[in-house]
Image (cartoon, rainbow, N blue to C red):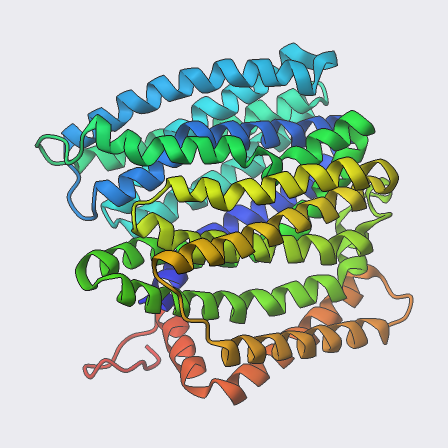
Length: 489
């Protein structure tokens, strides 16, 4: 079940991430470094506010609204709450815009406000589709959004003045278009009936998540804001570009696994009890490690080649130092969020998430104040990693007090060993080409690393490899035999 849902969501999430990376490549060349840094800060403030005003609603709806049929009463109640919280978010983000970018307050506030409004529409639509278990529609909408978010900003920046506002608004238009289509699809299959939850139940889950988002400011955003205050938007641009490159491949895997894994974990918790949910999360942890570790190893081994190929000269300086630290931070955050915090959500104890997030947030802010002044972008990465590792430790402790999640240490050790071998193969294959163009070195190293990863997985996990190959062939449209096996069509 976990592997199947991952394969369903992975292509859509992958295209979204690829689109974002292509936009990074283009935007860093079409707008100057300061403008790109302001664009990154728009996303930072937008994501922070969005997590407080709309992301909690997604989790609450999935936890309270169930899966399958969704009643119109539930949607009306949720939509009213979403409208009010979005208005609050607009007010808060306007104030934050004045603090983060006082020199460009009006443009910055407009960009963040548009980000919040369209994000609320899109997230609501996708959440309802997820509740209705309409995986195909969800994936198609994400495909459409990814394509539009690449095409529209590029068109806009070639036709209008080359500033961050143009790129941000064009991206928001793309999100809104996909969100409105998704909303129409979702509402078409809503059934009549009253809400399946009350305002009280919704806010009982939501208020702690809103508080967590506020507490989590230090963990997810403080390093960029402080980097802007200590240096300038150009320094934010360098950090944000490296962060996007190192984060996106790892996050693609984690989000694809959790997108289908979270509803299934909740279902098992409700049907079979906490122990069954813990066993499922243990499998999710192992799968995360098996796929994330090698990707992180390849990113570290080929960081110079990736930076040289993707980023302009002004962004490349600290890439080799940033990638390893950011990779550790992203993996720690994913393990905390998509494994151990999921158990807290299953128990409907969202207040405990504040206990999990507060120490990491404090560590990130404290380290940012200490290490950003002397180390700039590298200091921001170190502060982020320290906060994420602290959060992971807190999540393990807190979730263990509810229901311990078994850790398959042998599987983690094997995944780490495979990752090291794949990274070494990639580094050696790339180094053998000497001073060749980065694209050739990247292709050579990437191919060597992937081949080592696939070969060792086939050797050490033969049954899972055969199962994965069969599912991939099925996803590529091969016909099934009457007995259920796979054969060429």
